[in-house]
Length: 589
Image (tube, rainbow, N blue to C red; front, side, top):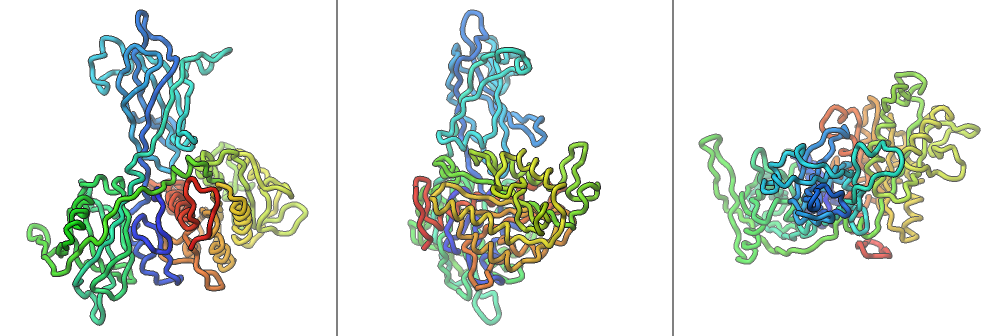
């Protein structure tokens, strides 16, 4: 997922995959480097969570003494059925109110609904000297189970939930539900998710890679993995025509690289506009701890250049050197800290009703409602994205619009309320969106053209009013469309304005259209949006995905769309100087 701490704006920092502002709409080397890193496997960051467990009023499974309880945790697969065991606690003897010491550590991934199943067992006396992982659960007495999403826990202000334990045989029972006790689950974010190392790196005497000028160097820092190529975790900006560069700080967390002693590869590359960057040199196996020692010593180390192949491979030492000018450790505000302090993500949706979607009564239409219950592409995007975001919105009242159609008794509209109301646009919950969508299909006349500007401006108005009221809300607009927009410049203008607001925009392209023009809206492709007045977007607010490109892959629509949302959220907070405890906002300097 995206980076789970604040990053700098405007290219002032390296690392974290954040795209820097370069002041032009094309040919920006620092944006292009971000794209280059993603092509090599760079992904957003995640937060490490520790879950602790206690229970109260468990059923007494023993005749003479109280229960000897153990909790087992499973994760549910995407099918909602497949279970994978994650964790077994120790056994707490002779207690109906156990507090387990052993904690479960797992990664919180914002873009996924991570459904957890908790089961509590009374361990038979004859097995109490056995290691927990060796116990056969079908030989133990089952006391009860509970389930919830990890998102439900970490969005609570105290990050604690109390879950009623149930038994399957009692769920369908008639009268009073049976009391099998409660399981209390508490989440803490690992310190490794918050601690960030700031490093300033310098190189001396870099080899010239260009015929008529000095190199345009940048650094890529990757972590070593047991199998496969090193995985990029951070990068510097590109410095043009510089043989002795000193880069702006890069920020690395211990969690990002594995541990403070994990080996890193630092590569120095010469930027090329075509993406084929040339290796100037590298130095392998320098951990964070070793880089700290290098900083203390004030010395540099020589870059290496691989020569030969296979068994004849050798590393040639270059006269070029790399040194560490600064090494400090700080604690950054994380995405989860903002959630715990009361910030919410508010879901919005806008649906394309242009005629190119086809007659919704016919099976070949993208809007066809299958009587078997199979979701069409529009329904699928609404449900899958909404299921993730709904956990971060307390009232679950979602603005929903349609565009590109003629509602009853009015001309073609490029932003009409999906619920048919002339006064309010909100619906209740994901099912409310689905109901409004189904009703609109047969109450509007499909028309055109495809315009995004009006719905983006409607979302921006809500976000702007919320900002003026100092609300702790960040808005996420999902636009689902089947075609290329015809108001590209108007959309650019709307997006550049939106970049200063608490708003991100997710765009899903359905059907078989050629979406190359749409991709320019997404900052991932190495271009920064510019308005018709020449103003450049202050940050990337768009994530675009063509459904046809990922529907047969391992990555879901939700993962592709939402992975960068925490980074966009944190970039906005950083630009506005908003901390988790701040109640007012100030403009970015």
